[in-house]
Image: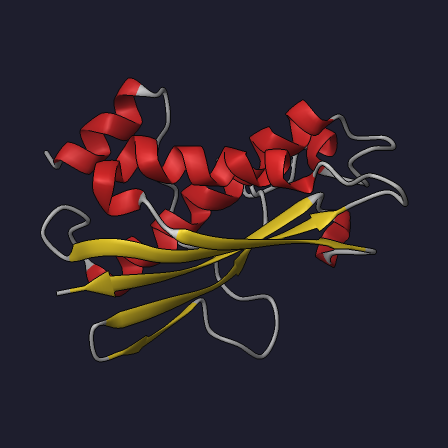
Length: 157
């Protein structure tokens, strides 16, 4: 068993299969030692977005539920990374960057706290290899009315 998958299990999480793209793009792109992961929505283990993870944070969605959605997005980023690199222990050198898009109600500015759900999970799962640069942007709408979308960039062997 891999140490990364063991850490997920300790957190009560299971790595889902990588989600198939829903339009004309790929889930990840590899160039040399870089893997760029397309934006991932907060799909749960059943392949659906929990209704608590739909809508605008600061309106119908609480910041806590939005942070949990960001955590699901990060889990789906890791699923794409496993599809791209194989073994998450041996292949992954570092998470270089995460980008977060937060479906925010007008006036809601605490978007960094929402994105912490993804950032914290990446460090919990990958340890020091999970520390990353990041940008977080509040947006007016996201696909499928998701409250969060997260993309990533990783260095692999």
